[in-house]
Length: 247
Image 1: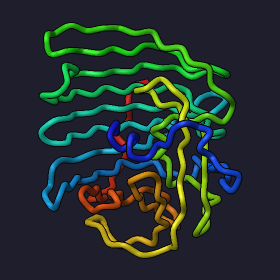
Image 2 (image 1 turned 90 degrees about the vertical axis):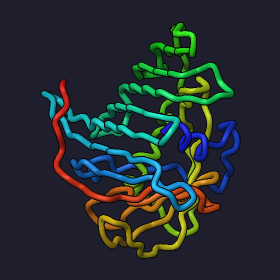
Image 3 (image 1 turned 60 degrees about the vertical axis):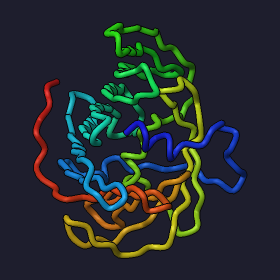
Image 4 (image 1 turned 30 degrees about the vertical axis):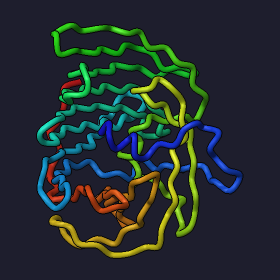
């Protein structure tokens, strides 16, 4: 979710403090599932999202394929596909397509199709305008070991070394700005919340202007997110079986 990444990310990467710990992700702790969410803005239902975590076993390794589709009425539709190495957590590729409308912007579509290799992320960005023109921009950015994709928020439930009061920081590649920023979280006290999908024991994680709630017990998942001012929230409504994607 493009807007959610903007709320969470802090720039530049130098914003990390000496007190910050590195995030440690246990990707295998994420279950193979298809989770449905609803969006609320100022108390009104404004859209939906479906997040799917699919495990693919290959000859020598395993991949976790995260796909997401969402609609935020009336201005934005989004499709996202991220592939990571399930055993190491290293990113492999990301595809991100957004259709949007704003009277203040000429841009109506943005798409990123990027591959991650040791030391670099590369591919292309496509930008569509109201006139129907589509511009293609090559992307090639050097990255250091341990850099994650900015959409790693969606793997927040896999953070295993969080205790109340801990502050975390990890370098993240921000695809919309083609830059390295800092993805920071502060863990809050454990609590219990209720969403349409049920009642969950959760750990709040606050970053920027946003707070997410992740389960503390298996199966690990994100069950809620909200802006700190309460204007926007999303909640888990239903979990179901994975629909296998094409290789």
